[in-house]
Length: 177
Image (cartoon, rainbow, N blue to C red; front, top):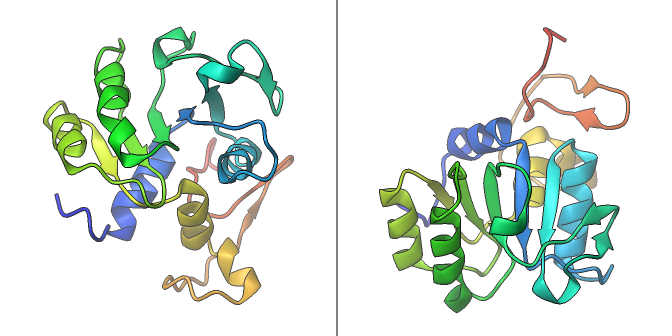
């Protein structure tokens, strides 16, 4: 797969199918990007499990933090990696050892490891590199356009208002709503 550009359908397909996310490299520091992304994904209805060995056993945004992927007590749909590119291969190996296997390996902005991506894809994972799910969700939902940013997506679709958070068409509509 070409990881230099992603089709909108590929990214939105991932964001629609994922419910549980393990965020490797999550930080309790409220000025770190991983903290913002964690908070955003929780607000959008994702179940996010912070993974940070130095913070294991403590909470970040009300979510228990785990030392490693295998410590998470639920099946994971996506592993979101907030670590340097050279730290990705062992994380992919750890994800490959999980039962059941996650569906997606997502590497954050500036994070790219083609060898680890090829290994994950050979095992059936979808892979995204050098992208942020928060930015992609906002771009595809039209939310980012509220700030005058050209998202490259045109839509006349009105946002679907829900209690607790808003879903703008990226998340699957449940119960025919």
